[in-house]
Image (cartoon, rainbow, N blue to C red):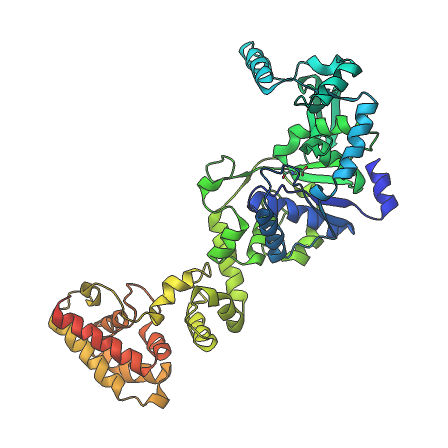
Length: 479
Ligand code: GLU
């Protein structure tokens, strides 16, 4: 059936249907990516549908985050919908189900439902609605509605075996008698999730529902609703859960999970796309670097695994380092700008030039190179000491550097010249560290950094000499 529909419309139609009740997290972004890749590969359409019917929990700021996150990742949609703008469509189908007695008003109070639920659970039964309002007379319903008695709309779930073929998990079977009569709307203008999804998947001619495995228990409910509404069944593909390294479901406990946080941390969109593609999918073979177009070429649902996908942060960092090294210096400098706002483009280009090889995340540039822009470096005097140097030897070493460097003319202040001037002296003593370590610490205040020649070259003559003098003062004042 779904195949026919697909042929008729020239390619599959898939959707990502986030509720704007939280930030775009990796799980959701992975769902979007797989839908996008599938649509692109098969010459179909990818639809973004914001499921904002839960007015209390939905917030436009989350919709904005989701939309911007997907745009940043390069995941483009062909059509966009917002459920809150489609209420009339749901009302029409709710009325239809009520009219056909496939749905009914339920006036049971929350307390009543809760005590029934407790009862059932104490008897070891799965809680479900007992069907009390199923047989209310029309006149009674009318009276209660006129009195504004609180109510919801329930769907009469038929007891049967619901079967469907999941493209990833194979043939699945559920006993719908365990489901009970599910709530499908708070009122005619407030549909609930399972109902609105079914109406929209039909209205938007969705052929494949590709979503996280956590939705699998909703699928039989949605199939029953499709049947009641005479809608064709769609094809389902439930993606494996994403697990943390401890094999529990990925959550905030495992660190950043929102795309915005990864972006802030300095992961590149191409890294996340490449990384997320492998959360449950594998093309086979050794190749592990894939950009969006190459993923489109390779992607297939057949290569999606059933078992949980482990989130490996080391791999994420490895990929990010790889993509950072692919950037031109100019581009990398632009990307690092927000982490070192004090630097101008040309300074940034010099700085990223010496750190590109070792950067795993863009944000690390702040830690690595922030010292260039600090007025006064704060570090412990002890740090200036190489091996067993005495205070006197440190001061002498700094004097030597200062003397040698001050001879270089401003216009000749390059890394090569600095090296040429300092190296013979560095080589003359026991080991280079006696000259170069105190100098490097004086210029950076850091235990580890790039080499002193490069740093002095970028810092400029004036700042270099100033920092050496400050280090000498530190030695004199013993602080
Ligand atoms: N609104 C649902 C969610 O955010 C979407 C479920 C679906 O894809 O059917 O989880």
